[in-house]
Amino acid sequence: MPYRGSYEAESSSRGSANWLGFQEVALTDFINKSENYENLDVYMEIHFQNESSQYPFKYNLLGKFERDADGRISGENSLLKRILYLTDAIGWNGGVNAKGEWVDEDDKVLEDDVALLLNAKYTQANYGASNFDTPLYIYVYKKWSKEKQKAYTTVVPKIVQNNEQGRSDLESYITYMKANKYIVEHDDSEQVRNGAMPSGTSTTTSGTQTSF
Image 1 (cartoon, one colour):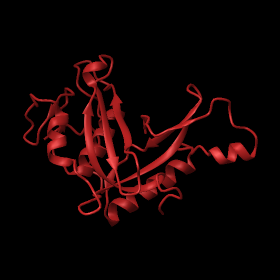
Image 2 (image 1 turned 120 degrees about the vertical axis):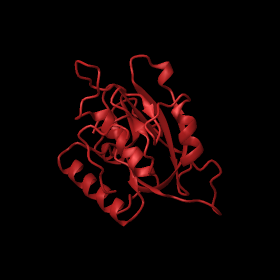
Image 3 (image 1 turned 90 degrees about the vertical axis):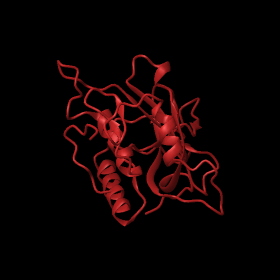
Image 4 (image 1 turned 60 degrees about the vertical axis):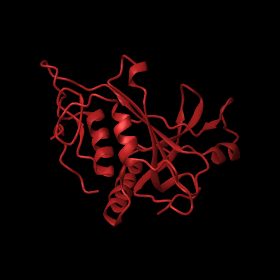
């Protein structure tokens, strides 16, 4: 079986804006950008879509694995955890092995780009009102970047199945993350009312990577 480190399999209030908050979505695209970033072990741009979003929600699954002296992925690993959120949500029994290589359900190292497999098995390329399915549940919010002086539309890395158990799991998680300030949602309107909008402030629909 693919490597899970120390992470056991997890069990899997809508937002006020139709493109923020909790969203029922479909997977529409995996784009593997790893070859262009030698300093990263994984860089996968993932697109989610639903009937209320004009543009896809973009989530960047990226980072480096923390490794032990033998080059094996450490059990408590942020990137591994984010990969497992995704694979568990879509129901794929593949993933990465202890060396950080992508493997299939039979633990065989993939010879082809993992994005090709995921696009073929788990995405809806031709979505529309008549055949739209939303098997996943995500949370989307605007996150302020001091460095960029912009608010980025961000997909929380915890992705779950769109069922009663998955929705309850994610909603409890978001409540905890907000209460402990791991998620701080940017509010353009509040800054405008207070006259505190930083110069050059703008928003974008490109998702940014988070580490929780």
